[in-house]
Amino acid sequence: MISIFTRSAGAVSTSDLLAGGALPDDSVWIDLLNPTGEEERALERALGVEMPTHEEMREIEVSSRLYQEGAGTYMTATVLAKSDTAQPEATVVTFILVGEILVSLRYGEPAPFRTFAARCLRQSMLRASGEAVLMGLLDAVTDRIADLLERVGIDIDAISRDVFDHEPAARSGEFFRDMLHRIGRNGDLASKCRESLVSINRLVTFIGSLTDIPARKDIDSKLPTLIADVHSLSDHATFLSGKVNFMLDATLGMVNIEQTNIIKIFSVASVAFLPPTLIASIYGMNFHFMPELDWPWGYPFAVFLMLCSAIAPYLYFKHRKWL
Image (cartoon, helix red, strand yellow):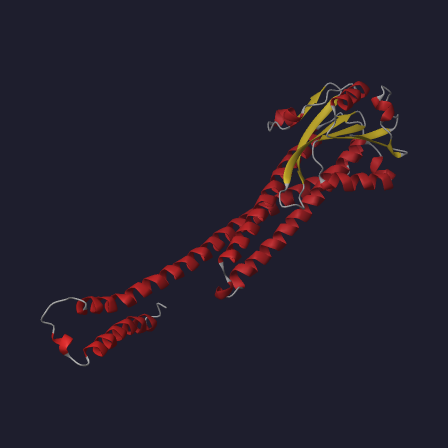
């Protein structure tokens, strides 16, 4: 799907472009979402640049993500998509500057693109140039990452309270499974946010090194703030990753404590029942000469002896505070 945004009219129809026509004269942003081969070829004819394939976009080398070729400046970044679901995805988006026109090529639907496109339709100032649109999109992506990191931080604090403040009796196997699931989900989201921030940081550094951009003022006015935001968010993502690892270790430590307590109970029970078993085994022997067999109170005496031998270890463990 192709969406074309112009300075004057906002979004315009793409039917003329697909029929072999030219782009509107005041085009500033062309957004390609899961484009077909026909749509890619039509845009290549209109702009005179080549669209990278999805496989080329997923290359991780800097030289494959940030480069200039012909009339286009190609910049690829990793952006989070489906971040509100249980399985967030890291998708790649390629930005191509051709003169004052920005082309965004993507195969996912990150939320910042939808929100920024809606803002572009309402505010013509955001469509001043392709460079202004690029900075606006990067700013929207960075804001979204900030919101996600804030959400991760809040959930990790809630997990910390649940793990450390809950009464031991409330900690069941289901409780710990839920905690580990939440920790893993937040750790995955924080790592994907950091991955996206690293790629955006490389992209904005590359933009800062370009000298032949037509609307340089639209970049210079926002680039320092964007760089500062990316750096601060990268540090915060690193901090949250450390906090996630700490909570993972703490939760696993709690699981080990619960397992140790269970094993301790079985150990105490084994020790407590060992002396009665020994007494029962002695009186269960079938020797002919056993004086206690002829006692009228022999059986109650043996039972009493077994009870005492079981209670004595229990009282000893309680006295030593092992229980």
